[in-house]
Image (cartoon, rainbow, N blue to C red; front, side, top):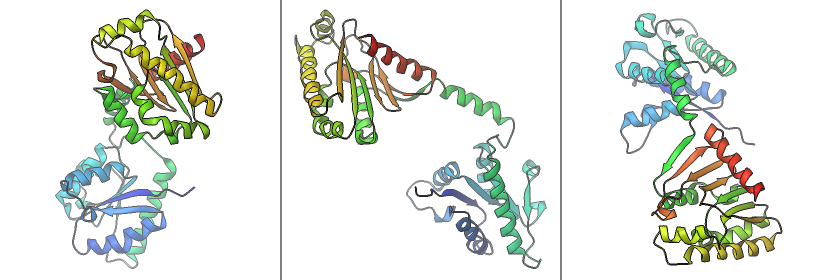
Length: 322
């Protein structure tokens, strides 16, 4: 497997002699440690520069910050880095240039008047980065932020990753971001899946040959609940029933290509929640009175959250019950 490079973002004043330090000291360190390295003046785009800077700070594995000369832009960006809990190697020509606010942090002081100062600086930075990578410390650089990050983490544990205000939006997202050929298992609870069948039949036929397994739960087409759902959505009588019967034939045809690849089971009760799982990608949505299923709200869930685990077990229980 190809070794993926880590990212290093450099915060420092522009102009000489700092441009030379960046090219002659920082870049060789990055190359030696297999890092991609970038500085703000190397970012090109049509967004505001601060948006691009914050983007690079967020994705950086290591940040090198030269706070020499008390440059206000450097201190602003360093504050962002600390608030975002990033690992920062702070360096300065003079300890007096290090503000009181973060003077308690370890700082590499370098003096350009000393013999072989650049070699020593390069060595000190390299050792510091290696130590950071080795210890892999995820504690916030400012301890009071620990509670803040824990609060964010707890909110994430609720499980909702994304909200789609229509199921059509979800379908568009799946088609553009979750290509079926990357997955091995597809589990669905739905009605007739007409849009899916119209768009994906040829792809599904090819993928089942390659090992894709599909399990579908749908409501019994002759159920009274189906005719009631048609009335609830002001649809033509037997329209949902027909899509489910068509789904049954579609499954038989797809399954004939590779026996056991596409399974369909029916339930006979009030419509269950829409359920779509592609391996670890999980989407859930209700069937709502008076609203077409494609216009219903849908949620992408973290499959490892409590609600994600609940719905995963929910599908398995229904599947083996029917």
